[in-house]
Amino acid sequence: WRTFALIAGAVVSASMNYSVTFISFGEIQKTFAAGPAATSWVLNAFAITVIALLIPSGWVSDRFGRRRMFLTGVALLAVGSLLVATAPTLPILIAARVVQAAGLALEGPAALAILLDAFSSERRSTAVGAYGGLGGISLVLGPVVGGLVIDVVGWRWTFAMNIPIAMLTVVLGLMFLPPDRPTVDGRPGRPDLGGAILMVVGTAMLATGIVQAGEWGWTNPLTVVALVMAPTSLAMVVRRSASHPHAILDLSLYRVRYFGRGNLMAFLIAGNFAGTYLALITLLTGAWAMSPSAAGAALALVPLIGGPMSFVSGRLADRYGHRRLLVPGGACMVVGALWFRSGVGPDPDMWLWFPAVGLYALGVGLAHANSASLALRFVPGPSLGQAGATNRIMTEIGSVCSVAVTIALLVGADDPVEGVRRVMLLLALAGMGGMVVAAGVDTRPRQMRSAEAE
Image 1 (cartoon, rainbow, N blue to C red):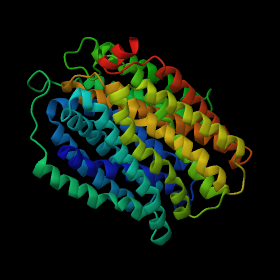
Image 2 (spheres, helix red, strand yellow):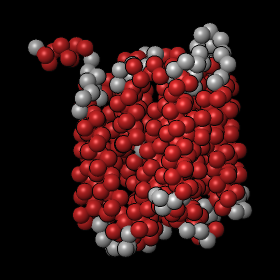
Image 3 (tube, rainbow, N blue to C red):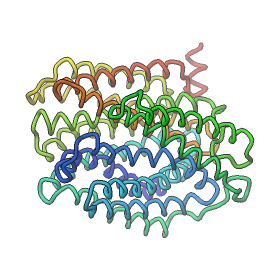
Image 4 (cartoon, rainbow, N blue to C red):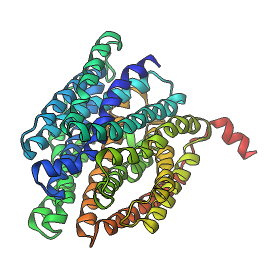
């Protein structure tokens, strides 16, 4: 748990960075006089960069040192936060978000691998649940503190808040994290640079095609080229990975029990969080005309319920198996989304907000972190960095898809409320898909399976 405490600073910094971006979305539009499609690249450039770099960074952390990559990533995230806070134009702001994303891509897989390596396989769901719960607590602080900061001194300072947290994490990590040791083949191997480049091209083209299709049109030559290049490049990555001695993508991980299902759950459940969050903040600050601080306080309901529930649900998954958490979690998302969809209107309605969004938040707590712990449940220790990166990249791909579709639904609707209703339907469909995937999972402890069989 000392290792968990040291990792906590990075989780807090990254989670607050994530949530304050959403609460700042409308203010960034006003500052640079930009539309929602252009401003969405503040979110999507970040996600595209993470997608492009996560798997290579997981590979690097496993081979060149998790501690080294973790601390480098935290420092780079701080530098990116400083650049965001001082950006004079929207393109420079987007470029600064790319720097932040590069830091997060280095930090994330290494942090999760360091944490999981400190726990036995039987306690990994507990560790991941606590990890996700800590992120949830930070997500509570992000919109509340961020909204207040925006009202008092402006949105730029919401990103500057990350800097002291990151600096403290680096200092404590240098002092207390154990030194790196070789984890693969006893020594670093030569990276598959060709595979890394193809991964960058494939994931970036996939994200670009999905994000820009709403503006360019699905039949536009640029969209078609992007969506053709994406699967072609990714197929070449798979082909290279089958034969390269130090492949970027470890195909053997997909033979690990439930690794594939966990990644699909991450795409459907965790990935959909970004689009839902964006739709809700757009409703609060747009149609409902709330101030950033009031909107942040209302949004805090989601992590306020989901964060503590992640702590509890991780322990419950270790004890009773993932299916008993993931299926009810998906059901809560479906019911909450449909409930909100049926009642939302142009006027603020907290009597609808608290029960419907609260039920969605309960589903987040049950299913979000447990999607990751399901994927990593049976992964051997030396491969945790790359496995964690693969799981995170599925979440980020889901995030890009959900943000892109959300922007299209909001912009294409006759009014903002109708756009939110459409996004809620998308959320319900994702929850249903997650329930179907989770229905075939059985990670109950052996003694429980034996007892119930009798």
